[in-house]
Amino acid sequence: MEFRTLVEAARTCRRFHEDKPLSMADLEWLVECARLSPSGRNAQELRFILVGQGETCQKLFALTRWAGALKDWGGPHPGERPTAFIVVLAPEGGKEVHCWDTGIACQTIQLAATSKGWGCCMIQSFDHQAVPALLEIPQGMKPALVLGLGVAKEERRVAPMPENGSFSYWRDAEQVHYVPKRDVDELVVKRY
Ligand SMILES: Cc1cc2nc3c(=O)[nH]c(=O)nc-3n(C[C@H](O)[C@H](O)[C@H](O)COP(=O)(O)O)c2cc1C
Image 1 (cartoon, helix red, strand yellow):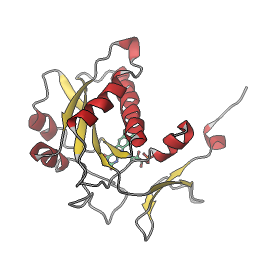
Image 2 (cartoon, helix red, strand yellow):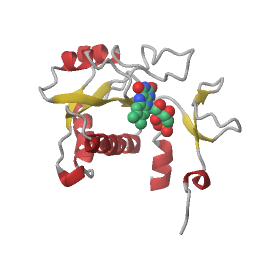
Image 3 (cartoon, helix red, strand yellow):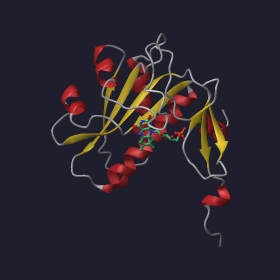
């Protein structure tokens, strides 16, 4: 896939083919891609917990919150739930560089997943007390972002920003998911 097309296709995905689970080898391949990503000072301090389909996956799903902007949808229904999670761990202590590293690693995973026809949802809205307990996260680390993953089921499209300037995403009557993105001219503040 041409790179611009891949980036456009890599929209957040929140509905999956639950009957086509990702394997542990699939998750390891995604971390293999993240492993090769840039990292501040090349310190590579992030760690990853891989959760394949099963009881832990279901328990972790229950600790995550999906699509806060879609008020009439409480998250993926049974049959459309993620079949795997990757939990990105960062050292406790909140250094800025760990946020940057997390974003870079997660976007790499999202692009890699998209290249295979899989979908990914980065999730910050999770139970920050219960997730470390469930996954017995090593001392000195904390979950930075949770990635919900699976074979993508929903159609997602980029839309122009609406006139009213709202950046909220929406779904149409056919349940197609739209994500408004600002134009380059709005983003670039100066050219020299
Ligand atoms: C740091 C970060 C945290 C996010 N947390 C959540 C979340 O908790 N739940 C969720 O459903 N989506 C979450 N998202 C997905 C965003 O809602 C999504 O990126 C945004 O709507 C733009 O859509 P796009 O990814 O398709 O461009 C998160 C995304 C990022 C980058």
